[in-house]
Image 1: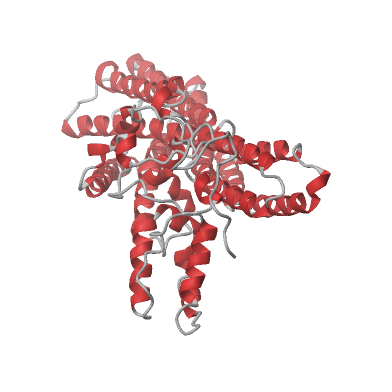
Image 2 (image 1 turned 120 degrees about the horizontal axis):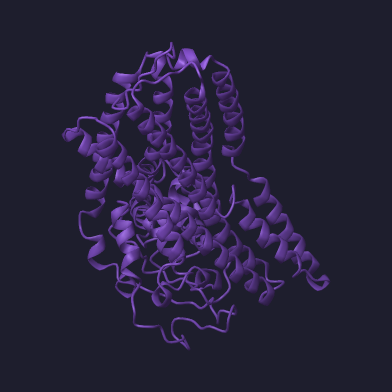
Length: 497
C-alpha cells in the first residue's frame, strides 16, 4: 500500500524540512543530560541520531517491494521476519541495514539500504516531533553530544559496569561466608541480601540493554531493556525542550541524587565513627562502590521520570493529531502505534522493577520489624550499651533505605504502575469521538482494545511472588525471636559482620 505524500504537519501549524520551519534556538541540549548518560555507562552505539527516520509502515512497504522484485520470490519476507520488528527498525537501524544488505546481495537484489531512502509520509514526520508538535530534524552536532560519546565509549562503559558488578559480587561472597549457616545472624543476612539485590538492579538492566543491542534480532523480545538505550532516551528528550529549559524535574533529580548520598554518609558514620569496627582497604572500596551504586539507583529512577513525562507529552500531541486528522485512519494509526511501541517498553521496564523491588520491600520490612521486637524483648539484656546504640542507628538506616527506594520509585513513575499514562490518553480520546467518522473511530477503539489486552506477564508473576514473600515473612515473624537473636539473658551484636 502506498503511503501518503509528505505535507505540512497539522499538529501545531508547523512545517516540513524545506519550508517554513520555525527558528531553532542555537543552544544545544543540556550537558547535564549527556553527563548523566556517561556516569550511568549507557553509551553503546557510535551513532545515536539517525540521518533519517522512517515509519514502520513505509519500511514494510519497501521491504515487500524488494522481496517480490526478484523473480517474484517472497521467501525473503519470511526469512527476515525477526529483523522487521518495528523497534529494531527504529533503534537498531545501522546493524539491521547492514544485515539486510548482505542478505539481498546473495539473492541478486539491488543493494539499496533499507533506511537509505528519504521518508516521504506524514507518519515518518511524526518521528521528529518536538515539544510543540513541530517537525524539527536534528543531528548529533545540533544536540551537542560531541565528545561525550567518543570512540570506545561502548567498550569502556561495559567494562566499568562489569567491574562494578565484580566488586559487589565479591563483597556478597565475603558477607555470605561470614553470615551463612548462622541462625543468630539470619536477620543480618536478610537485610544485607535485600539491600544488595536492590543495588544490583540497575547495572544488571544496563548490561541487558547493551546485550540486546549486540544481539538485536535474537533478543528483540527484551523490550524492557530498550529504555536504557541512548537512542531511545534521545528520542524521549526531543519532546521535553531540553534546549531552552534544560532537564525536566530538577527538584526530582536533586531528591533522587541526595537521598542515596545521605544514606551512604549515614552508613559511613555508623561503621567508621560510632562503632568500633576495624577498617581496611576492602571496607573503603566497598563504601565507595556502595555510593556509586546508590547514585546509579537514584539516576535510574530519574530516567523513569524522564521517560514518563516525555511519553505524557507525546500522548498530548497525539490527541491533537487525532483531532486534526479525524477520519484519516492510515496516518492516525501509524502515529498511534509509533507512540504505543515506546510506551510499551517503558511499561515493561516499570513492571520488571516492581517485580524486583516489591518482594525485597516485604522481606526488608519483616526483618526490620523482627529486629525492633527483638530489642524490645525483656529477655535480651545487653551489657554493651554502645552496641545497642549502634544497632538502633543501623535500624534507622535500614528504614531510611526502604523509604528512599519506595518513595523514589513511586515519585518517578507517578504511581505503582505505568498503565495510567495510557489510560488517561484513552479517556481524553473518547471525548474526541464524533458520529461523522464512526467507521474511523470504531477502528481506533479496536486498536486501543488490542493494545490494552496486551498486558505484560510481569504483573501476574509479581503478584504471585509478593504473596509468597508475604507468607514467608509472616511465617518468619512467627518464630521465637529470642532463639533467632540468641537472647539467652545476654545479647552481643557483632555489627562489624
